[in-house]
Length: 413
Image 1 (cartoon, helix red, strand yellow):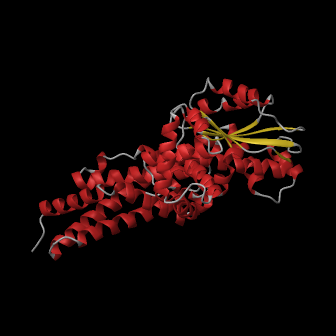
Image 2: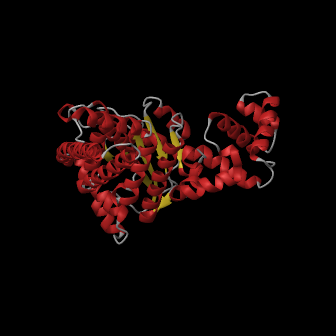
């Protein structure tokens, strides 16, 4: 029997409605596949976050199109996808990598739709009509979005390339990445002395803003006040600034001055590497600052304005092994590693309790709780874990720190 347009629209809408209920999980799965298969998307936390946001917004949009029969000429590029293209251009990443993600995504999306169709009682004509409609809409959506994204990318690359920061950023990236460059050549390339001590910093904004670049650039003045020296700075994109405080002696941080300087810039966040010497130190301190930033963003703690590598070093060194860390944390903490609010309260209480040497009184003072409340929570945590906290205490303390600093990425869902 031939399928009519009404039947096809109903079937396609049912498939889209089913996928809509799974969008968070599907978005996460698709974004992970992009990051695993496309090397150019890896190793940059800002780009990674935009991959996740862009994937979610595109999936949500195409599901709406299928579910409600929205004409494609009424659809614009999702804001997160446009921001992703601009960030790609600012960081001089190839647009081909961006377009490949969309083609991979189209294939995955169609496969999910086909699996959904396979569970339905449809005759051959109905099935064929639904498949044709879904694949046609998906292909036309991808073509339309990619065409606009290329325009956005090329426009942003042209505008960004006109900034004086762009040339310096390119030189700095070369010095950081090419370890065959000697110190003399590196100094000539970036116009700054590299013999001596360096502390690297990464400054960023948590939220999008049309004047983001103007709001992140004051990080240079903040660092100058905190260290008493003017830093070398490079605006990497419109939300991120790299900086180095350098000198013949090791830079010393004035934490009170830093706190005062940050009060005037409520959206500004900083990650700091450890002091290190010469060209090797220029590079290593920067890597540490980037890793500290990644930990800060994974923790989800927006109240902490400054993250130093020294305070998150264990977590930072384990960023590339999150699957293994999650397994170890679950084995160490048991059900205490569950990702929910009740377990979070227990973990924080136990962490402070152990940090204070097992003192209920001191832990209660730090947590602003009654001593009996701390006692109850500690005993409850031991009950949930299934064994005393003193059993493998060092492992417990490390696992609790990892839970706090790496957030849901190492917790049990």
